[in-house]
Image (cartoon, rainbow, N blue to C red):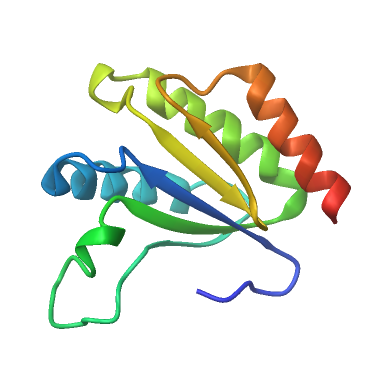
Length: 125
């Protein structure tokens, strides 16, 4: 998914390396929630090159890309942290990449590291 004008792309990878079916379900649930957030232009599951596989490339299962207005980036990331905390099954490693600035959250999306990621993205604009 290419960036749409006036938005930034946020790539989210859920629970890398674990059970593909669980990652797929979690990614679909998160995509649905992200799509309803204000300022989100698009929220899509990441797909590999093999379109015959409904879930896409197995290495991309559990990944999604969200296009959001830059002013709402912090809101999106706070909602992601809230989404993760609501259910113990979601408390696995999450990787967030925004314009090449990547942060890994092993169990919880902590506010200090989240603030550092947001600051790095804002400095890079």
